[in-house]
Image (tube, rainbow, N blue to C red):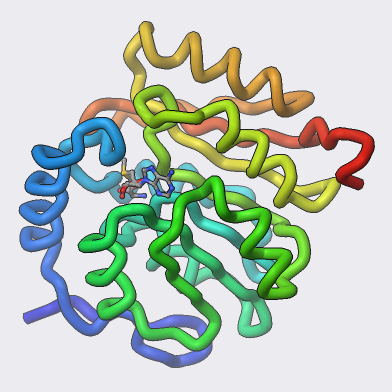
Length: 215
Ligand SMILES: C[S@@+](CC[C@H](N)C(=O)[O-])C[C@H]1O[C@@H](n2cnc3c(N)ncnc32)[C@H](O)[C@@H]1O
């Protein structure tokens, strides 16, 4: 039987989709779009917990998720965020996005088939304002325009906003990603997650370098 997730406001956020079906779909999408999917499987429980640990999701006004994929992080955000919190998810893959829109029914969440690059314009157009948290599952090293994506994150965050990103622990990936993060944030904390395939590092980044004109 399909798993169900009950959110804090009592709504059922997931009405179908076994984790095996999720994994099969994810693998199929990876084979078709290796660079933008960037992973063979959805993130593990340990990884999604590590990403959300220490975030005050209950009192957040706006949370943005980039690259939700089949939704392992999205479901946890919905479970933990407040009744008044809004969640906007940007997913570039049309098939994955359609499945997630169908799977997660929650009046607090908006899941859109758009690139992370469109986030600042969309948040302005839809009058959401700036985000307290941007939580990313994007494969930063393999996607195009990663510098512009980070610019879009900085542009979308509130002055005290926090950005969370994970990266698989492969030396040729972590070095460039850390340099990229250091160009956009004053500081970041690292948390190791060994129970994931492959093991990963979660980066929690604070104090975005807002260009003077953006404040
Ligand atoms: C590694 S998967 C992560 C999925 C999920 N968050 C997880 O942790 O299992 C990366 C996701 O980012 C999406 N993606 C890649 N580039 C994107 C972009 N520029 N804007 C929005 N989503 C993007 C892919 O389609 C894919 O679903």
